Image 1 (spheres, one colour):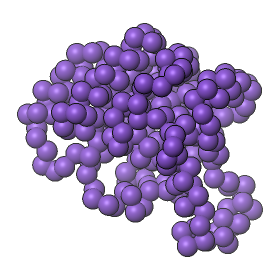
Image 2: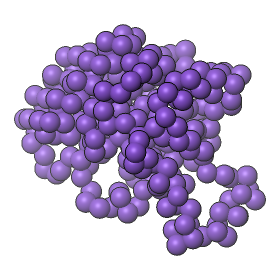
Image 3: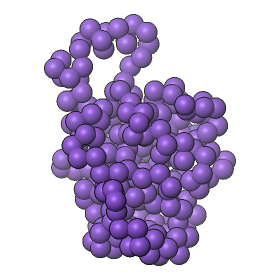
Length: 240
């Protein structure tokens, strides 16, 4: 049994888009037959777990549809809620004793939590969302410094979120240059500002291909990763 890969969209700033990105990527990968587990430690809101509760409401997803999916062997990927202490304790066991391909961590929007540094050593890949504004940039750079300090070998990427069209091209280029100066890969794909459309459509059950496909393809094929645990060894050859 191969070891699960642990991926986290992480940021020192709350509201940067880490939970949205986790939902988009995890749900899309699951639709491509990748075995996914999400562990929600984002206390106290646990927004990922609450999203699943919403998706299971009869007004959102028909019970008949869920029953039909179950008959076909399609069961929504599991979401576990736990404390940071519990996560650190059980994560080594989960990743070595289950058939999960990818474990996504939905983490708190602050790094100032006991044992976060210990958890950083157990993460295989981290993607940091950046908004095109100063507070988000500073928080993102602090997040980079944190992971590089506590896990010097971890592959780190950055992705722009909530970009408006047209955005400030010159400012984006300058900030992106500073991010790359940290040795961090910057996604070509972005999560553009889409008003309330993502919030209204996003699901932990049904994938949003038009929002997630390019991000997933870049995650699989371009973003830096531990080659011995490359995700595209378990994902289908094409995600089109």
